[in-house]
Image (cartoon, rainbow, N blue to C red; front, side, top):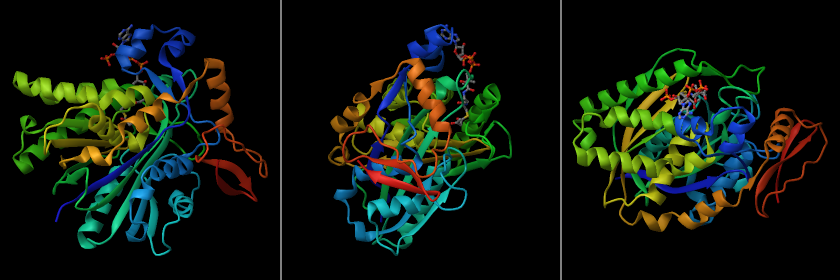
Amino acid sequence: MQVGIDQIGFYTPNKYVDMVDLAHARNEDPNKFLIGIGQQKMSVADQTQDAVSMGINATLRYLDHIARENVGLLIVGTESGVDQSKSASLFIKTALNLPPNVRTFEVKEACFGMTAGIMIARDYVRLHPNHSAIVIGADIARYGINTGGEVTQGAGSISVLVKADPQIMTLSAGHSAYSADINDFWRPNDSAVALVDGKYSKDVYLDFFRHTFTDYQKQTGLKASDFTALLYHLPFVKMGFKANQLAIEKQDDGTKKRLADNFAASACYSKAIGNIYTASLYLSLLSLLENAQLPANAKVGLFSYGSGAMGEFYSGQIVKNYEKAINQAADQELIARRQKLTIPEYEQIFNQALKNPQDGLKLESDEQSGTWYFAGTENHIRQYRKK
Ligand code: CAA
């Protein structure tokens, strides 16, 4: 029996900042952001979008196409949690109207959280082949105005359905994991923005990629040339580009070109959205599926990285006719619908979103109808509404 990804849903908020505008405002050469970092735009979440609402909106993209009664597991990976105790997944389960017997919880290990969820879901479906699992990654990357990390912010969510005989990608057995207790990036309980040792974080990312990719090749006998595409967690596009350069440096011209072209296809959406932490690797997968010409049974390698730090490399195989299960036009429209913010507008929205709204204040959303949003708290209980 093959188990893997049967559906992918995607959501990003309806506002963005252009990197050229940001560079001008911060007295930087725009090419540092466009070429040096590799980013063109970043999505901005106002105070009505959070990990819960974005996770609901991503999952709603496919919910009508699945058998809701078969969902036995719902996992949310996030590092933008809305409560220190209650799982984000419980709010989401209610909005999605999932059955009461679903097992549901939130996982955290920085950007690795969604991969952890997918691995748990894969093993769950192997044991319960008649059931499926929803795994969501939803995050807002916030470093702060005028910080080194500002250019690598973003907001969005990816939701996948894991089931037997999937339509999009089967998950191969085996993986290579690597962990170490380090301080490259973290967010203390009293901080709404992440703290980061930027240069060190880049070195550790590449180090973890080397470890896991080398070990995976040893374990499986696969070589870089056996892959149609290598996908990466993309905190910013240049980071994945550097890892891909390491992977292809000793390859023949054909492999170099294929892996470089497919990396470019996988980075299209991240370039326009920015870092979405847990969901970033899976945004790369969606971008590859919708922007590359993939041969039948394409073999894809995935590198997941969560600061702190945890790395994992695993692989999958794209299923024939996967195109029927994705909607390129709708996903591209979701990105294109965003409104550009001026830098003062972005700064105002950013600062407002850092504060909790006064209890009892009803928030309104300027999103399209049908979109879920955070509507404020009543008696300190978070309220989610559909526009
Ligand atoms: N034209 C073209 N390129 C230019 C340029 C110009 N005018 N000016 C500078 N550059 C290049 C630099 O040469 C550099 O390239 P290399 O990386 O190839 O050396 C690149 O632009 C970036 O320049 P700096 O390193 O000087 O940039 P910086 O110090 O301002 O910050 C950063 C960059 C460290 C990534 C910072 O944005 C940051 O801290 N981001 C958050 C942390 C992060 O994303 N880390 C990634 C690994 S951790 C992870 O993956 C988990 C996660 O999601 C956070």
